[in-house]
Length: 149
Image (tube, rainbow, N blue to C red; front, side, top):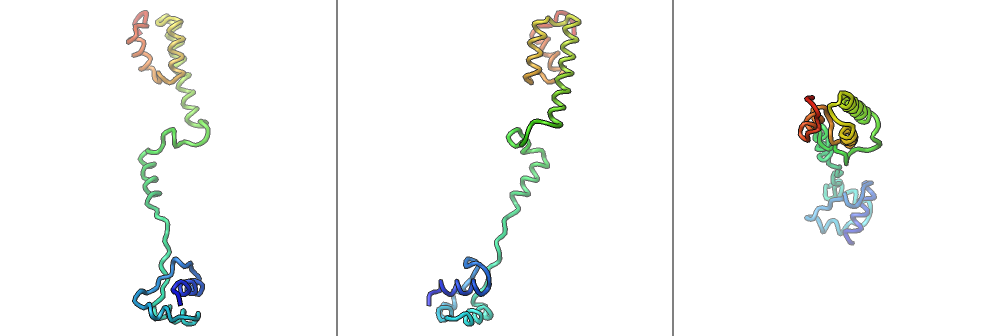
């Protein structure tokens, strides 16, 4: 009798898949002689046929991702889902409003020209200039200031 049939009978008897059945290679003779389900049960009792343990899915990768997220990694724009709503958008709006107010003040005090004001406003909108310090440095660096800031 083929060991394929023995494996199938053992799987049915023990209620597991065929891949989880272990057949003792030393007892080939006894296994090939097994004909009935009763023979299979006897071989299971003798330890010639055993059930292999279940293979679980490793949690290693999940733990690694969790650790990386704790460190602040995997939070770039490619990992974000959903719209840019909520906290990030509110923060951006507040920041842009503050910078525009600052630019308006510079224009009204005639520190920068109207033309430079328009250009800088575009830079703020585009995210090139993100802080007052950057605006100040840019104005000085490019000689836009009519008088001291």
